[in-house]
Length: 382
Image 1: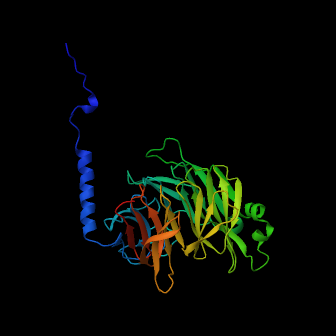
Image 2 (image 1 turned 90 degrees about the vertical axis):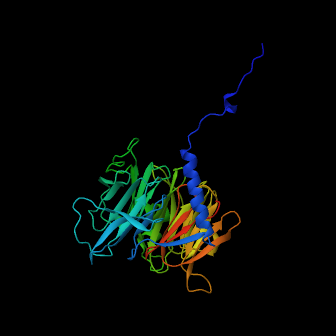
Image 3 (image 1 turned 135 degrees about the horizontal axis):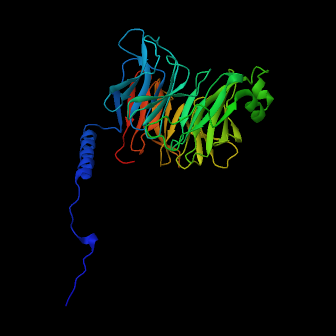
């Protein structure tokens, strides 16, 4: 008697169509958008007032401190960059009804954009945590006396760092998130590790950099831009030196102990830094020039372009940069750089950009100006 074996893999079986329909709709919408433009850049107006303090999320949201309809009052609000519309205003217990414009602000999105850590001059001097899924404030941690210069999450959300200025009172603090904190307060009040300013700099850089007795060298003013390496094993932080002709430094620290690995002398003031996706290079901007420090290198390499802001792609050797000055032009530019051959392959005129961010999957990038203008980089394939 003849028998036949049928492989389940070859059988025709019913399959859910929802995922296919969702993907097809996205592809069709993208195709229609591409037909109506001749550039990889989209420009949208997100808010109408000016804001110096804002942060872009990996999901295309924007947190900004900007004036609201009531004259003379400022609030922290969230916006959808794609829709160019506000979504929610953030508030904390005890917030004043009237807050003068121009208050300091620092914001940091978690890697999935679910949580936001925010510090703002209209709130108590603590780091406030918001759960954007539940649209609630979860509480506060990390009281500070000097307003934070930079807030940073690690790539998996396990660690969080805050750097502050203040000379002898400057601090660099690191917290570890609770193992299971879904929908709950992820951080406790006490940091896992911390560095006090002047003493640490004196030990790392030598007394001359720290005491600032000689005018040209300047004096230690605090910790600046800070970023975790992709493997979460290293934290890069800028040691800011105050003075017209002073040069900042970048210190690489072990995580979570914050033990010094090494320091790199910069040329001028460092305005931004970012790790490449593999953690083998650190790209940074100092005095309008872009540099990169390769793994194992003693000195940084000056790159063949200027930049004040940089953001590395999450899984490709590509960097999005902004320069406020372009040769033979009164305007600046946003541009993409291939870090393998150091060539610029796409650019767009722009002014006043204050933050850059790639989407979580790396399919697009965002840049937002102080005037609320958003630039969305969305190539056909990336």
